[in-house]
Image (cartoon, rainbow, N blue to C red; front, side, top):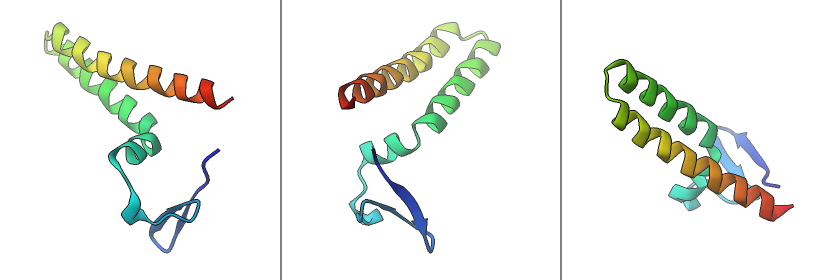
Length: 76
């Protein structure tokens, strides 16, 4: 289990400072927000009649969600 807290405008994870963040750690922290944004983009693209583009963004979201599911399953 990861422990996150915000202290004086700086985020900390188990004693690590923000300067040690990686793309992966940021994506993990904001995964729900990213998945939501990808789905909003897909919905907007569908409304524009761009179904294949919408599918592309949904595919990205699916891959991220599946990877997270595998990661959580392995940690149990």
